Every structure is written in C-alpha cells, then in structure tokens.
Image (cartoon, rainbow, N blue to C red; front, top):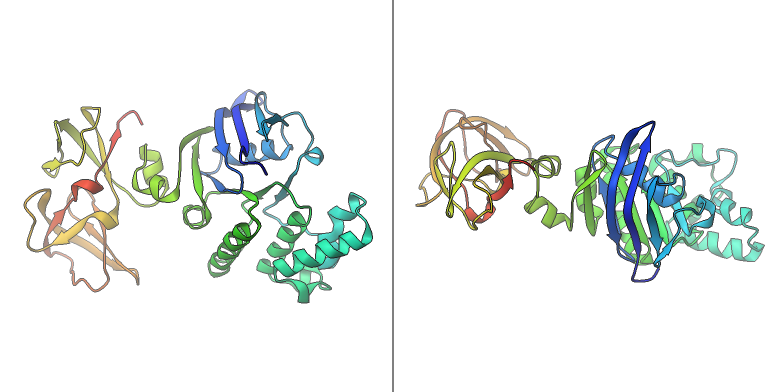
Length: 345
C-alpha cells in the first residue's frame, strides 16, 4: 500500500432517516494498525462496512492511493474482512477454508498451494491443515479466519471485533499474535472494538467514536493521558472528574485551590486526573495537597484500588502500601497530571 494510505473524506450515512455517521474525516497511514473504538451504536461498524464496500456512503469518499473507491463493490476492492463469527465453512477442512477465496478467483493450483501453505505457516496452523472447524478451539478458528483473509494478500485488512468470543486469557494471547502478525506483514490493519484494553495494546493510533462522530484521534498514550473530552476520559479507562473555576494558573475546586501546569483557555470547566496519577502521602508536599480519609480499599493484585471520602475520588496505589478504612491521609494532585476539559466537551 502506498504511503498515502486510506482517506475517509466527509463520510455521511443514515438509515431510515437516522444519522449513523456524520461528516467523518480520517487519514489512515500505510502499514498502520488503526483502531475504531467506541460503545455499541457509535457508528464504528458502519464505518468499517463502508471501507469494505458492504455499505455505500450517502455522501463523502473512500480514497485508496488517492483514488475514489466509494462506488466499487466489495469484490473490486483490495480489502478483506475478518468477521466476529469467523464464518468458517464447517464442511471444509482448514486447508480448503483458507484456499476458498483463491479458488473462487480461479488462481492456479500451484499458486493456491504455495500461498495457502505460507499462510498456514505464518499463523502456525500447518499441523491443523486437515482438521475441521468443530475440531478446533476458538483461538485456532480465529487464526484460520485470519489466514483465509490474508492469503488474498489484501492491502487493507478489516477486523470486526474478531476476539469478542474468546475468553480473557486467550484474548490477550491472540492480541499479541495480531500485533506480531501486523508488524511482520506491514499490512494496514483496521480494527473495530469496544474493548479499551484491546485498543490500547494493539494499536498504533486510536479513533474514539461517539454518536456517529470521531471525538479524538491519537496514539494510545496521548489519548489516554490527554483526553479532549469527558467522554474520552471516562471511556478510555477510569478518570476522576473535578469541577473547576480557573483564575490565572490556578483552579478553585471542591478540594481547594489547585496549581495547574498550563493556563486553559476557559474560565469554568473540569479537570481530569487518572487514578494512578493521584498520590497518597502522610507528609504532604506544599502545593495541591489536601487532607482526606480512606473510605474503602480493594486489593487488585498489581495495585490497591482506594476510594476517598471527598468527591468520591478513586486512587490506584502500589499493593505494598499499607492503608485501612477510616485512615486519615493526604491526597496530592501533581500539576502535570491535571488535564483541563471544557464543560461543553
């Protein structure tokens, strides 16, 4: 795929008068692992189907290499889709499932054999070539579906929540496999998911969607650490939201006056801080520190989840920190960890 990649330009789509997508603009780079993340009904699957050619936009263009492919059928596009259900043929073994698309395109026998064997080896499925889907685990079936898509050598691979049927442990393993595979191939992967951890672990960039619009696009660390809206902050992990009134480089809040790292453009709004960025201490620093009391403590293995009695504040601390319910404690907000949000966002 060229460096120009895939461009979605002013994409609009409605169903029965209800807007599913409103003026979507995205640039997806060649060889990028890009994720469309959002809750059910936000439009992410509709957008994926438009890229695939299963839906035609009401307005706007899908550009590949700078050429408009919006009106081309799914079969005419250099794009393949891996579905949530895998959609394997139960009467065919693994080899024939993977070969099916190539045989439909009348690819020569030797070329089919070469490409299928390469795909099976790449997905570590060679030993399962003669098995049928009912003889395989969910993770193995998912890899067969991937092999069947990749054997066609698509320029863009679309992944429609392909891991949702897997248990938590297997899901994590397949996420690592997906990332390894994408790095190895250099193919553009576009994933649709509602799973925040999945998006964070596999993506080069994430587009967070809500109500048919894109709220924010960025690398995982950027979107998590500096969300642009309350929705993004709360959808992509846990977030403490604090109402604030800004004066110069300070904010008046229910806790007291907070020193900020930068001056927001607004006067009244919100501050967001992640639970792991809040600090609990017995000897308080001079600024941004206030007395509080421990309301509840839950041991999570790798960290303690702590609730304080002020503003329902949630904190994550190292598991070795000794805390008990009712304990008096100081809470510290590092200035660089406070992210300003406008009320209108």
